[in-house]
Image (cartoon, rainbow, N blue to C red; front, side, top):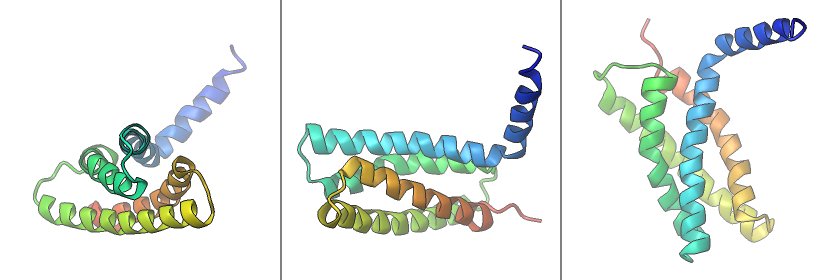
Length: 143
């Protein structure tokens, strides 16, 4: 076990250094799980058209995402700019929804990629962009 201690210490130090990114990924994972679960249930179990399911799944995961990102990931407990942040976050998410839906259509209809795998690919790309916008603009700490 003595040989594992330096590796454990390095892992803990890395996690501390990148905890905001880790929190973003965990929060995104939770919201994504809500999204995928709703998408799958509506499309595969209830037979709802996949593009409609995509929109409903987005709406289901939105509130979970906003609250976790604001209060946990970016640790912004202030309520002063809540309405502005919510508006900006909603705008970003609507843009993500438009991109997500358009890309879903292209991936499924033209590239013939399974809709769940398509969603995974798209979500990863949008996550990088969203993190940067959230950090630099929406939940940016005042100096």
